[in-house]
Length: 236
Image (tube, rainbow, N blue to C red; front, side, top):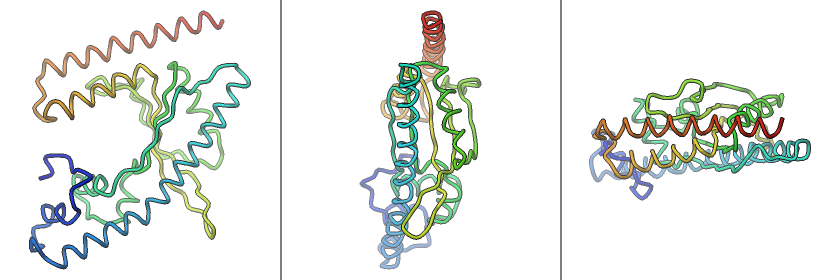
């Protein structure tokens, strides 16, 4: 069943049937567990939504300040999302973990995700520096797929950070994945995802299509560099 992506309309009980063969297919206990699991994941969702708001606000302030100082905005757009309960279940299962909210918090780093899209390559590293200079943000992991692209041609800077979220009676550090890329990188990644995961079966994509996608990525990366050089020439 999980050779295909879990749909957000798939009932949790149906998912658990396929994951755990020890549950009778119409077990009342299975449905009780499924309902409790949904409640558990819903309970932590607020933390991740709050963390996204926190990071979004900081990015907007930094962008406004940069605009004021340099008469140019280093951020084109900001997108965000929180993984659905069913996406979390799928990721835990694929990694071989027991399915519970404690392991979801510990093992999954991209439950809360923010994508920052910048005009130019240098803006990516500017945003990285400005964000990580804030002393209450902890950097947990950096994956630079710009300096070292993935085999398929994917380029982006990924940061896993921990950000403080203040509630009425306590403070909690919450993990957020921040992806920073240019408009050109986002263009390629969005269409590549559509082609690879929506149009063609993920595991049966023809090698000539993969090669073509990688070549497109390299062409787009070259254009990105040329646009950066043009920008630097004009500004200087």
